[in-house]
Length: 90
Picture 1 (cartoon, rainbow, N blue to C red):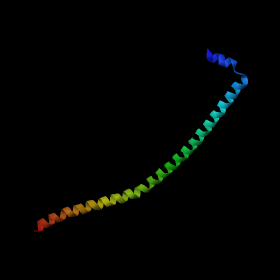
Picture 2: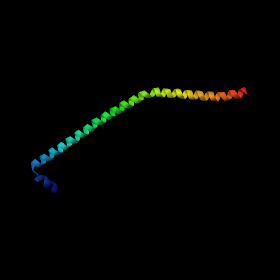
Picture 3: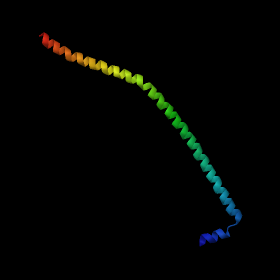
């Protein structure tokens, strides 16, 4: 009841001012959120580009690591063969 009495006694200019003020506050908030959204989208795009760039660089590195792994396996095989040959020769 108190709310209905207060509303009934408010001047139309006061209500209009409050609506206008609330609309301005809402517009400012929407503008700030839009600005933040644009910045976040830009950061996301930059991160996606950076990730794509990293993914393009990895295959040569992975190929190099595969070669190192093959060389290590070859060395291990040679080390395993050498003691066997020494034992057979003796």
